[in-house]
Amino acid sequence: MNQFLEKYSPYIYAILRIISGLMFAMHGSQKVFGIPGGKSPVPLASLLGVGGILELVCGLLIALGFLASYAAFVASGEMAVAYFMMHASHGFLPIVNQGELAVLYCFLFLYIAARGAGVWSITSIFGRSRAMSAALE
Figure 1 (cartoon, rainbow, N blue to C red):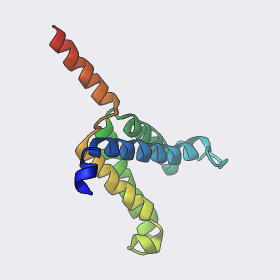
Figure 2: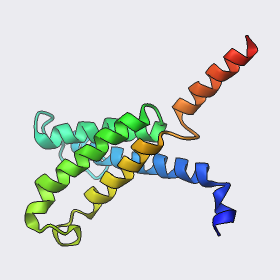
Figure 3: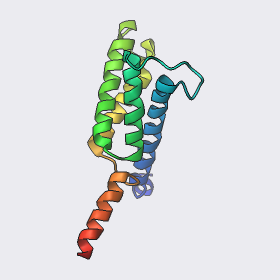
Figure 4: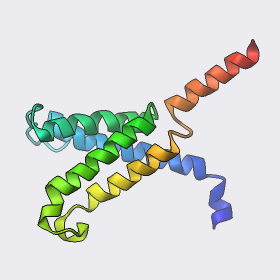
């Protein structure tokens, strides 16, 4: 199976980055704008409001693959803080305190921060256009 999927690895990673970034951005848009889901937006000057702004901005940057490593690192840190501030006081294990999503996002974004944007990203498009410009000169 590994030999079959290995040639698609960069594209599967890009799909993972795009989908996880968009899902994270939706958490932020719920907090900031109240959509999707019709919830009331939280005050932007609150802790949840700042978290929502970070989720929206970092999620979009990760999905687009623009400054993805930096955005993913910040998002990973936000999720670590969210876990310890909101969930850990209800029991340390994520399955007990309903913090599974925070832990999963934390380590997923840490991986994206380490690996970078990859293919299908704004970074790779700009990198390719610079390399082509240099080759033509």
